[in-house]
Image (cartoon, rainbow, N blue to C red):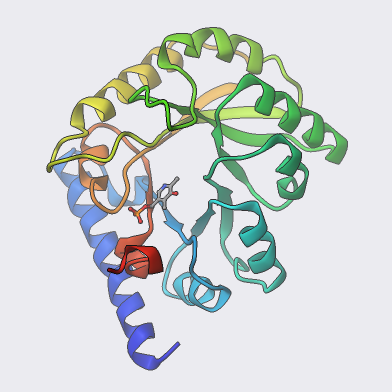
Length: 239
Ligand SMILES: *Cc1c(COP(=O)(O)O)cnc(C)c1O
């Protein structure tokens, strides 16, 4: 990285923390109660390490292969690592022991495989359930209507701890366009919190990205996943 790039990254991170603080205050909360996950896909180990040096405490990766390569290069040393992308069941085994939270559990079957692998390692794996809140065919995630039923099954699986919910709403066409989805997520989050399932503690509501994390925070998000506002545009976004 050039010095200029380092400076830019540092400023971006400071700006994101400031925006989080402002949004939290507006919602009568505190910035430090909001967990910032730096979505670091397509950014190399050097950039991830620099981000951690400038105050990022959690890195989030989307692809298992990329995560493993960067893990080997000690990209995440000094930070927590979350998995936030679509996860195939045959890749679960590579993540256990490396990631503190799998945010994207989008099926009962995936929950069962994580449960099995976690037991092999003698650990309890923290997970979030990913909700397909926009009911988009192209997206993975649990159907919000079936959430209770699936939760009843997943919460009985040994080796898992369900820590909350995650959502990636449809790409908003205008500012504030996702508020109603965020609001529905908040409602689901509250409903489940009140039901007291075993092994379920609704600690994290993970929603909001670079374009809309303030809206998400206004609707109760306490974990936001931010990529471009930290690292800049990803190569495929530059025309
Ligand atoms: C890339 C990504 C983000 C961050 O998106 P930006 O718009 O770059 O902030 C958040 N969540 C997931 C699951 C992602 O893949």
